[in-house]
Length: 184
Image (cartoon, one colour):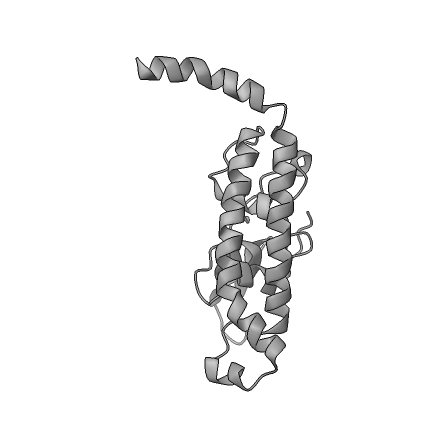
């Protein structure tokens, strides 16, 4: 009985929500971008993985930036989750898939696709994936709703046989990354 009632109410709620979906996304986008700017600034001011004893000898601005990193990472994770939920309600599908999550939170133009994906999957360091993304040249920024497109995974690395110099019949496999010269 409860499921039938919920099934009848949900379409009406989504229809009503549609009137404010874009504005709600823009608001969540602004909140995400604000925290992303703060974290990017902190990462630029201090190495998030520097030893605490090294930070103690730094100016107050550096030590404050270093100390703020874990708090800002947590806030950014929360803002990214909220952005995904609001985007889903605004009509963006598969917001639980990494290709869409990355597209919602990162402007990767100009960055190497494989390195962006490696950074996205990073779990190391005090800044986690967000620090790794900034390090590879990606910008932490949410796009306008109309510009959200899944960020494709990198193409598989290819291998070619290369003759070993000085050997009669010997070859080695040499990896070739098709993303090295790819353009978005």
